[in-house]
Image (cartoon, rainbow, N blue to C red):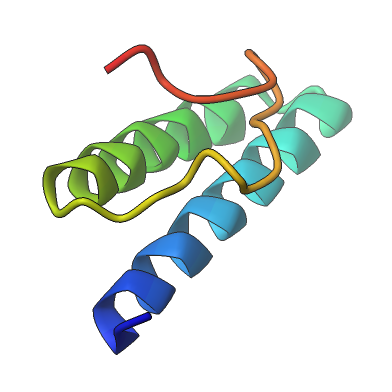
Length: 67
C-alpha cells in the first residue's frame, strides 16, 4: 500500500475515533466538526481508490458513507 493510501486510511480512522469521542462526551460542536472531517476523508479516499470498508465503522452509521 502506498504512503498516500496509508495516510488516507489513518485520516479516516482518526476522524471516526474523534466522532466517537465527541458523541460519547455529548459535544455537539466537536461531533459536527468530526463528522465533516470524516465525510471529507471518505470522499478523498474513495476518489483515489483507497479502500476503507475494512476500517472500523463510524459512530453514527457503523460503516461507510453512502457515497
